[in-house]
Length: 345
Image 1 (cartoon, rainbow, N blue to C red):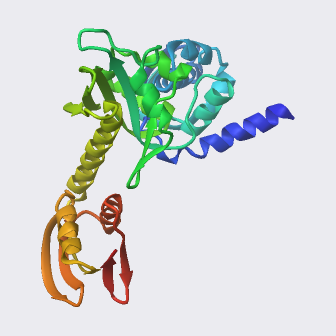
Image 2: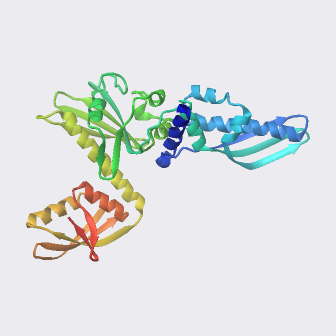
Image 3: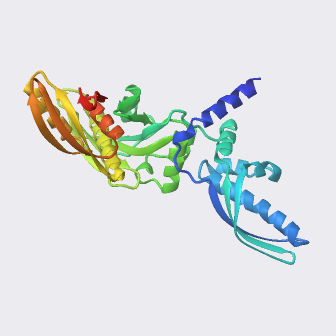
């Protein structure tokens, strides 16, 4: 009974993977077999092709040790993981069969099997931003990730769930799956293979390595690096409070703005809405304008009529209305559509 309950929980967990990393579950293989006749040669060739494709895909998701365990599956067990087979080219002559095949593995079934057999640990809740925090006491000392002494990671974990606008931030978990692929030395220059595995394991959409180096009693240097992109160096100084507190906010602000700009760049179009803002004092409207102009998605603001504590204005923006709403929410404002017009509060 307990085993059935655990299996049900595993399957329910698999159903939450709608935000999985874009790990490919397809593999191209070439095979050639010789047997008593072409039919037997083809049968043996397909067995070999299915196994090669299965192990090829598994290598993208787990450790070499676990791949070796998966290789112990019998052919009649392994065939259940094969979802599609596309024959690119084949030739059969006498007792020899040759083929180039593209084979698709059932990713959900494979993930469920790996979870059930403790070959992988997966975070159920999807993370928009996965933070990998490394730390060094000085720029000359070695850095730490999961080891003792990573005060930067401990401070981030102490904050609990971090959210900015519509983005959810999660700190990478200290589990055997993550530790199998990541060290403090390889995170800043991780390979694409490692990157895809970490995205998969942690159910993450974007990964940022954030290296913190203490630079005196009141200062911290942050090195923020998304995968396969340039790094950003930020010096954080706070003479009154713990600089790590300010460093967290600096990190969130930078990543949030970077992701907003990414959304704008990928949107490919520009729109305009007409809105109304009610204010008690003129400085409220001036403050709103100032904040709106800091949002990368907003390209232009045109003020219109002003009367009785109310101003009408137009906003030219890139991207979708949803991203605009999220951007405004991050600045403490709401955008709603009421009685045929947009209202900002």
